[in-house]
Length: 85
Image (cartoon, rainbow, N blue to C red; front, side, top):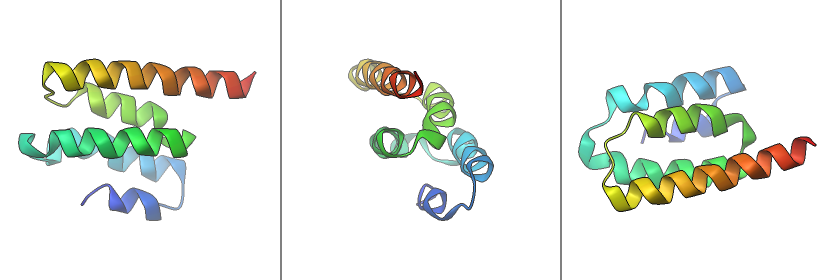
């Protein structure tokens, strides 16, 4: 999977570049799997939060997944902000 390359990317810029291209590369049938993967990555790697949110915005998601993603993004974003204070 394309997201496996993110694990081996040597810096945040390359991670961001890979993630930002995902909506253009993957098939709509893979969007749900990408959402689940990105949610986990956002919790574990602060370098991917901003590009992951941008990627999620470019995916075609069913309504229940979209609500879940928005709530999860908000939680991760707030967690990041809290750690910066």
